[in-house]
Image (cartoon, rainbow, N blue to C red; front, side, top):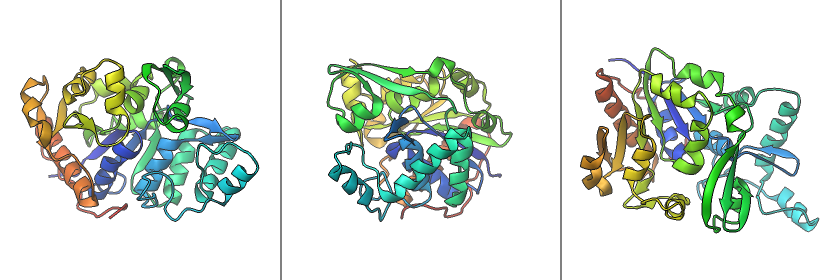
Amino acid sequence: MGTGSVVALSGGIGGVKLALGFQGICAPGALTVVVNTGDDFEHLGLAISPDVDTTLYTLAGLANPQLGWGRDGETWNFMAELERLGGESWFRLGDKDLAVHVERTRRLAKGEPLSEIIGDFARRLGLAARVLPMSNDPVRTIVETAAGTLSFQHYFVRERCEPAVATIRFEGAPDARATPAALQALERQDLAAIVICPSNPYLSVDPILAIPGWRSALQSSGAPVIAVSPLIGGEAVKGPTAKIMRELKLEVSPLTVARHYAGIIGGFVLDEADAALASRLDVPVHVAPTLMRTRADKERLAREVLDFASALHGRSIRPHGGSGRGES
C-alpha cells in the first residue's frame, strides 16, 4: 500500500474544488494541478491569469468564500479610484490581487516563464501542491457569439455569458507547447491518477487539449485518466456549461461530456442523480455524490476518485491522511 502522485487538469472555481480535495489527502508534493490559461488576458497593462490565481488562492486558503474568486478580506481602494477617474472597471481587481498581477507582469516582461513565476508564487503562499500553467506560450480562448467575436473575459465577465455561443476557438494553440514540467509529472513512476476535474469541458479543458502534445501525453500515460462530470441532473453546478451546450446544439448530459473525452479517459465519475446513465457509457463508471459544498465533501470525492483509479490501475493506492490547506 503506497502513496501515489496525482495530476489534476482544472479550470477555475468548479475544478479547483476537487483539486483542493486532492491537496487535503495527498502527501506534500504529490499533487500537480495543471491549469487552463486560455482565460488569460491583458487588462490595464497587466497580465491577468484568472484561473491560475483562483487556483493559487483556493489552495492557499486565501480565496473569497462568498465570491469563489479573488482574495478573502480584500479591499477595493484601487477600483474605487479607477472608477472615479473614468477607467475601465468591469473586471474587478482588488488591492491584494493587484499586487499579484503587477509582479507577474514585471517578471514576464523580464523574460521569466509563466510556470516559474506561478511556482514561486505557490511556494511563497505555502502551497502543498504544485501549480502549473498548461503552457508558457500564450493561448487565448475566443468566443464567436451572436453579438460578434469576443475574447473570453469580455464574454464571461463583461457580457456575463449572455450572448449565444456559435463556436469557440483557441488562438495560438497550434503553435504553443505543453509546459515541460507538466509533461514530466505525467511520466512519474508513482503516478496514481490523471483527473480531469469538473470544469467546463469547452471553455476550461479544451484549451489544454488543443495544445499539441497534451492528448498524446494523456493517452500514453500508464495511469488511469478519469473525468468527473461537471453536470448534475442535467445542469451545471456553477457557470455556463449547460447554456453553452444548448447553444452548440449538444445534449446537456454527462453522456455528452464523457463522449467529448473519448479516446482520452479510461473512467468517468457520475453524480448519483445521473446513476441511470452509467450503463450507456463505454468506459468504466463510478457513481458518487459530486456536489462539493464543504471541505469534507471535496476530500471524500477525491478519495473516491483515487479508489476508482486504484481499481482501474489494478493496484492499491492509499491517499495520504494529511489535512492539507484550504477552506473549512
